Image (cartoon, rainbow, N blue to C red; front, side):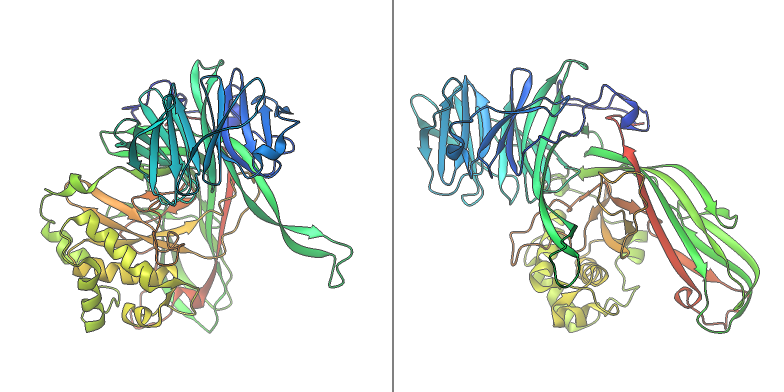
Length: 567
């Protein structure tokens, strides 16, 4: 893949080697000792400075060894509950509640800079200019240091708490809720590009000069909680119990920006995925000349298929609408037979965000006729002929005519009307809207129906998510459920992804757009635009479903993080 563009001196893709572990010179994950919840990270000399808001520690961290020193041992109380760490002009900056403070590096005594009307989340510094982010206010306020005055305000790019760092003419923003890092023009706030972070809850970012590569490494801090099983011998109901612990670390963020094709990639992982069927019929069957088709992983901007091999039994391969399909053939299948068959694939997967804006689609070509007959029709019990769905389709978009704004309004309308829950079976969109609860497949059904009635071509895609446990390497991981999302078509550009329900996390919004025109690294894209699995027999009168014949087994193994290279 050609590297078309990269911001100057950011650590960018340089190698096609499959594993980061093979690149000893590459940055590593940093776990500062004694840290509980890092709420900011900055660079001072040859070290990272991290802010632990729980203990009030300012930590000097060696990126190579994790060696950690508390540099404010006598005034930790001043930094408890602080956030938004920044360093510039010989001063340390941070925020607490609605106040912004600075202190000299010599004495670390906080001095009040400004009191804001709302709680402050992030602070950035460039020479004598101070950038202050407030989620509740919805703006990044820009101040002059001396004399102190407000210069201007920029709208925040995301919906969550945001932290900042300034580099040259760029303002970099990480959003905790959006799980996204944005690169903005620091004067105008215009978005240059954005990328998904490989982990949830990013809380700070900093550019660290890497002497080994001669480039800056963009480090991102993360803070959250993780569940674990605790052995508690005092528990009268048993020694094991589920509880939570703090989880905080610093990790390099790799970026590949392709402005020509309008997307950006972030950290990737080498994954082995297996899909197999275990033949175990529920009833008596006797099938002849069986062809059992299972779709194979797809090549996309963010997913590269390195190798596919059979499991259990050999298969032949077909190409259907440009998609690879494994075909298993049986002369005869009887109830007494037991088989295990499927495929194993080696995949490179990365996070992706597409970069189209509403202005980019104001003058797009008409939808091709073949797309109208295939992707604007009710081909999957979508209830598009019911008054409930037709009225909802009109109500969702109002008078909007721009394609991107229409699909986003439809998504937000569905999020307003539905709450996520697993359901025993997939109901039609009219029933789902009426009850107000839906699974991921039911979200997709409603989104498809409303979008197609509004002239937006869309299709269901999926099929599984690797458990997002990037630090658990070489361990078989099994997803609890399958997962589907959708893609919508922009004439003149192509298909864009949109998640079904994972962004429906805030009651009545505002909803994040992290997975609107974006997918994280842990999604596996399989058989786009075609059925995932089909069964064909010599006797068309035989009515038997795959679920009655076999049990599927899905397994992911994360083999390692990819180095910053696009092979």
